[in-house]
Image 1 (cartoon, helix red, strand yellow):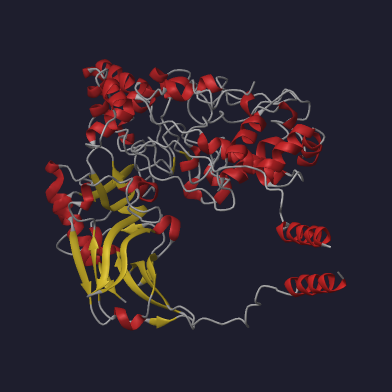
Image 2 (spheres, rainbow over the protein chains, first blue to last red):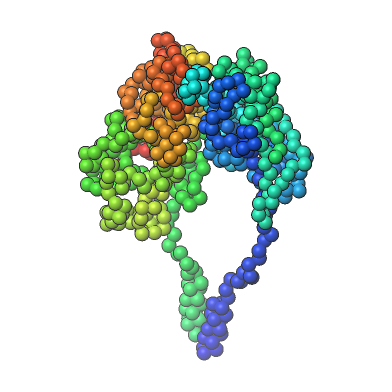
Length: 251
Length: 358
């Protein structure tokens, strides 16, 4: 009897002494490298801020209130930096895309300004929650009236009355999209800056004067102040899109 | 001897079976009934939808004890029959004071990215904390509100089952109401089946039946709504949610007595900007605009047709501002109105899941 009791007590003590194996000391994983691509609007060599008035070479004044870009496939060969990206200067500043990766993988970059067919016409509710192409994130960069995304959105105000008074009495709106407006642009030998132990960044510049005020290719916003990429607006739409593409250069 | 051994072994097995958290309330996940053409709702990881959390949230939404004098619940300014908005221009608080803005409709809130007309709350949980303490609304400290709830044994039980604690606090109240509000999804109106048809998305038999009821005038109104040279409404109101998540100045005033978003950001470019609301159930949510200045849809349509007032911060999306609006004729206005009426979702309004608890 006593022996049985003794064995039992030993067994209980034995079980109670069993504990989960304590984890060994913390293992510090290698820090992930992050790369950031920025798109910095510039005016005459300085950073351009929204609502900052621009003097046109044609003698009128205007300013931007919104600059947005929806792009896809920012890649360097087989290395993908971002399969889709949404640039919203007003809300998220200059950040164009960010990813885990090493800058050495992205010495060159190509990217689509827009969304290629057939993805451009797919159900916008289907992309993953985090994707800029999901309707929750794309928001006003998606047309409900014509299945497809707005690739580039440029909005602002223009002063059409040359009386020296800033009344900026007219809006300008360029909503560039539709398959014929899809563009691809490339950059080589990008200048990457090491920001910290784990982060590197490269700047692309959006040269604002190139958009509407490029010598020989001026777009007079007092007259040509809107495009929603309708068929009748395609010549102007293509011109603005081409100049938008040209306006993006590496720093 | 054998009996004694059996007793000891039984005792030992009993001890082994004891684990921490032995009392775990049954609270299954809530399965959200979201329309197939909607984006996936992003639900905070620290506040997943549960059956008991939603049920508790519904009770709290209709709970008058959240107000200082026990007379006003959330539903007091967000009536189910009005798509959870208020038919009054300004809502009346418990002390007889009136707010300064029209009460917003509570519909599809789980898909929103900011809350209130000026976007001062970034999450639903944060938004819910405001009205209880607001002196012109429910006018009660959260401390008092929580004391009242804690005194009610049924609430202590419900909180325990929903959140595993009976230590009620404002955070848990907000979480449970947020859970309930996220279930309030409106996605079955004529507009929804028109949208799905337009996008070639598959329709259920029930939806096909509703599609068959859409009239030619409603389709024409939809086209006009989306036409650049027609209503030009789609810039701010499109997609399955019938809105875009932006702030805009829609040309109501030349100067602003209410600075709207500008008061939050102090950015001069934001002055007079307000959240673009959804148009879902718009026929039920009069009066309209942030200040409820328009009593009817006809007045709203007239505003965009000929009543646009220019100002320094007017949204560029109001493209025809320089000519006072889009200049619709009477027939076109009628078509737009007919289309707006297709946005009414009777199933949402009459859904017993959202009705006051018995």
